[in-house]
Length: 85
Image (cartoon, rainbow, N blue to C red; front, side, top):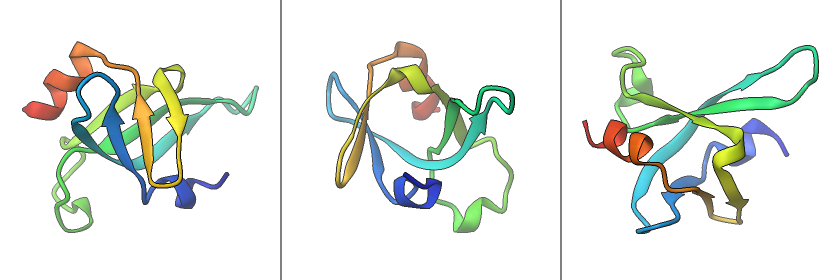
């Protein structure tokens, strides 16, 4: 799967179905080739030109399912609190 394919999907909290944002970027371990984290946009400012303070890091192991339209992530109070700021 390509980053461009998952970046168009909404990221959803598994506990309450709240939309957290959309995939903006991914952090990859060069040595192993594994995805470590994904960054999600919390707000959809025009191309996020105003900095990256509206992004939140989600560990790859918190992703439960990547579906056709959405990505479901394990509930994390920290993620939820950061996306509400």
